[in-house]
Length: 139
Image 1 (tube, rainbow, N blue to C red):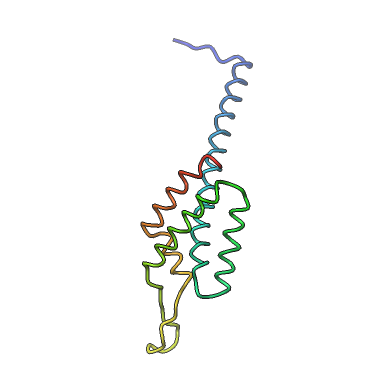
Image 2 (cartoon, rainbow, N blue to C red):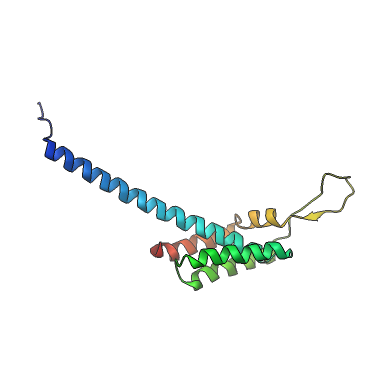
């Protein structure tokens, strides 16, 4: 059974419909990516605000404020995530390492590695999933 080729009008309509569906999908993916980046970034920023190094604390506050100033979601949703990060940080020991010097050199704290590992811990991952669920309608 032979099919007739699509008329130019139908071909244009099909192309427009396909482009619309693709752009809708792409826009939704972009929103999800922005949400994920903000939640990941806010969790890291919340961890940095709890460090002993003043520069890291300041950077954490600035990073968190930059995310909040975008205006997505309620402050309570973000605060809940920060509280979960704080609770997890209280339970986890600081990452430590020796420098390139002698083996008997003192261990040094590694706050960036600590935060990196903390935001990937099961408790914080669960908090990030909850935050993304609450914040998704605002993205």
